[in-house]
Image (cartoon, rainbow, N blue to C red):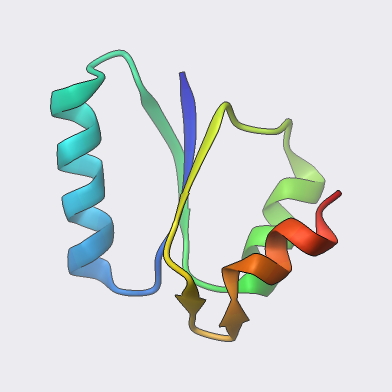
Length: 71
């Protein structure tokens, strides 16, 4: 399973990585991104991940904007 993490707080992102590794050892984190702009650019340049774990508030806006604009 390929996972993208959208989180602007480093400790929270690292905790998500650890929990995911424990729960699904085969999961591979493709990237950890902290901005809406970065997430949109990444999604534009890469195939869609199987799962996106996302904080609501990112450094430059709401993660919901990523989902609204990425379709």
